[in-house]
Amino acid sequence: MPADILSVSRLPDAVLFKRGKVRDVYDMKDSLLVISTDRISCFDVVLPTCIPDKGEVLTRLSMFWFEFTRGIIPNHFITASVKDYPACLLKYEKILQGRSMLAKKARPIPIECVVRGYLSGSGWKEYKISQSVCGIKLDPGLKESDKLKGPIFTPSTKEDSGHDMNVAMDFVERSIGKDTASELKEISIDIYNKASSYAESKGIIIADTKFEFGIYDGKIILIDEALTPDSSRFWPKDEYVPAGPQPSFDKQFVRDYLESIDWQKIPPGPELPKKIVLKTREKYIQAFEMLTGKTW
Image 1: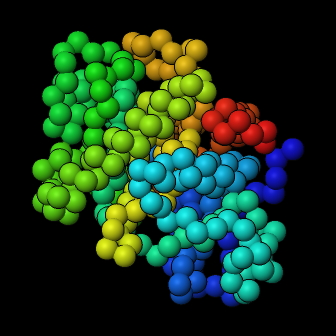
Image 2: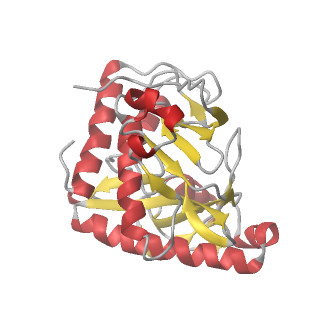
């Protein structure tokens, strides 16, 4: 049975630092408390309907990948054990358990680091117009969902509101410096290669994914979330057929529903039907179980 739904957290004993599209972040002085709610965002609009258990899936899957990739890059994760949280938070254990973590206070780098191994989503839309993605020229004649010769780094801006915009590498270099841009590209592709190889062994294709990084003690670390159904396109390997859209384990299922109705992709978002909510929950949990080998 679905757990209790958390749409918005309210912790009077903690200082709210930021309420994002999905996560509520509190300033705990020496660290940040990151709570993954059950909100879902599509086309950069937070929908009024929540997906039960979603926040816990995102937290537990991110923890799995943080451990898996720590040999490539350190990350912001400190602990997800509520008993080790500051004493003022213990009374909120029921809210926090399973869907929260304490994280290091890093200075976010304002770039979304997107890696694509397959041609889909906004990359496919851009390719149809220019035969390129973020300034990277691709082979002619590619079809939707085709596997690329190798993963490509296709960054975007990180906007607090509105749509993130795909940008070329020279924009990133001008924004954060050539050396940092080059390092982010190399790290992002290294993580993607290791994670996608593992995921394929578990029956999941990671078509594309996005990472966020920050500066902590003068070094780049991985922050936010990692390789979740919210930040990635997960496709079932045994059903992959190029030249069209793919079935998925991620929120593409919700996007497809929203594309089928008369909504202009501006706030407010529409309510989701119960069958869409339950099917999305099922897909998120299925991805978690396949990738981690754990039963929900």
